[in-house]
Length: 309
Image (cartoon, rainbow, N blue to C red; front, side, top):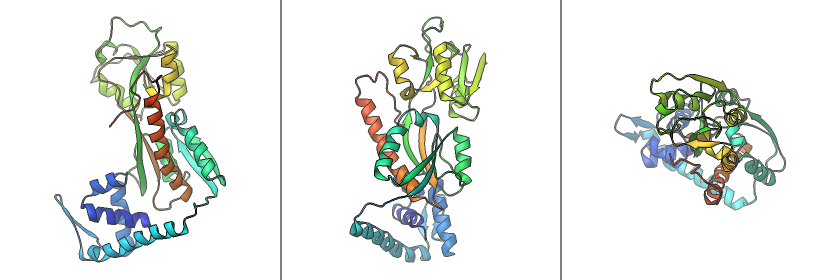
C-alpha cells in the first residue's frame, strides 16, 4: 500500500477539504483526488461522500482513519528509531526546463551528489510539453517544468515563481517611453514555443491587437542572444538575465501588463515512486528557498526577480 495515498487520505479527512489538503501537502487538488481514488480502488470501498458543498467520511472511511494514522505514526517512529540517513544508489533520470538549468540546478545537483554519491544522474533538458510526456511514459523519474501535470498519478510540488519582463536591447529604437503594450505591439517579438506560457503572455497582453511578427524558438539561450542583437522584444525571466541587465546589454521595458509569471514545478510519479526522485524534489524546495533568499539579499539585484503568486 502506497503511504503517500494513505497520507493524502488522512490529511483530507482531517481538513475536510481537497483544496486545504493540497495546500498542506504542497501539491495540486487533482493529485490529492487521484491518490484517494487509487486508495479507494485498492481497498474496494468509497472513503468519502462528496457533494458540491461538503465532504464527509463514509463508514468505511471512518473505520480506516485511525488505522491510517497508526500507519503514518509507525512510519515516523521507524525513521526516528533507525536514525541513519538513507543510502541511495542507482540511476536517476531528471528532466529540466532550460530556465532551471540557468538558475539553481547546479546548486541542486551539487548538494544532491554530496548527500547521495552512489546515485548516477541522467539529465535531459527540453521544453515542458516534451518533459511531461517523457515523465508520463516512465522515461523520466522526475521533472522540473513550468506547469503542473494533471494527467496520471503525478505528484506536483510548487517550488517558486519567477518574474518575467518585456526585454529588449538598448540598441533597439523605441519611440518615446513605452508604458502600455499598445506602445510596443508593432515591434517584432521573440517567443518561446507555441504551447508555452510565454506565447500566451504575448497574446493576452495584445488583447486582439495585430502583432507585426512573432518568431518562435525552443532555446532560451537563443532567445537571449537574439534579444541582445536587437532582433525583437522577448518576454524573459529576469533571474536568468541578471548579468546582461547589469552589463547594460539588455533592458526591461516598464510596459503594462507585464508578461505572465513563470512557475517552476517539481513533478514525479506517485504510483511508482523513485526514492532518489523523492529525495531530489524535496531537496529542490530547500535549494529554491535558499536561491531566492540569496538573490533578494544581493546588492546587485536591481529588479524583483520573484513573484508571490
